[in-house]
Image (cartoon, rainbow, N blue to C red; front, side):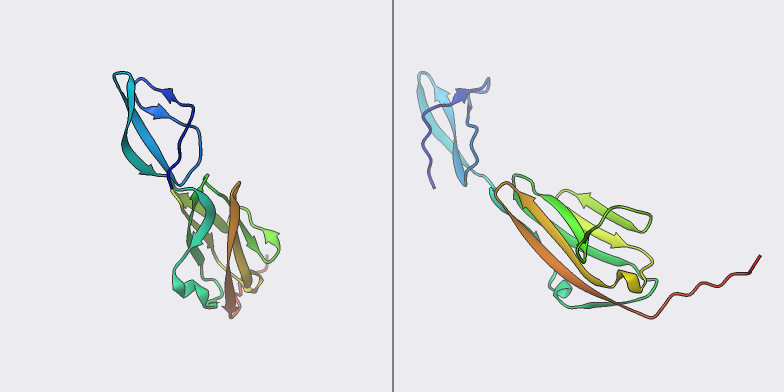
Amino acid sequence: MVLYFKSYTINKHNIACFKIICDLYHIISRSSTNLKQTNYLPCSTGEPEIIYEDKYDETMVLKAGATIMLPVTVTGFPTPTSKWFHGDMEMFVSDKVTMEVVDNRITLTVKGVSSSNAGTYKIVAENKVGSDSAEFVIKIKGMVTYSGRKQ
């Protein structure tokens, strides 16, 4: 895709600057009084996409007390915002739940799971261009019991 612009500004490095989101855009430089095309740069624009390993397509069966870890990569431009859900309830960071974000990789971790943590986990990524979602099904086997002395 080639775009032609009627207005631009030249910065101090003689590079034309455009404020537009596109699939492909030109960087042009000034040579005397003439402008010439010098380079193309791809621009990653579009709806969010959630990417994860195929093994997460299957129902995951964990023992009570184990840790759920759901790593995904979220792409898109502008940078999407992401939310995790357990069933219909939005999840938030707590003593058992963490949501680690490194670049565009997001990992949901739930520690010390019990039967209440079984079910469908969903991530929704949105930006002004669109949205994407992915679901993961977790089953928990066994019960964690705690014993203690009565005082």
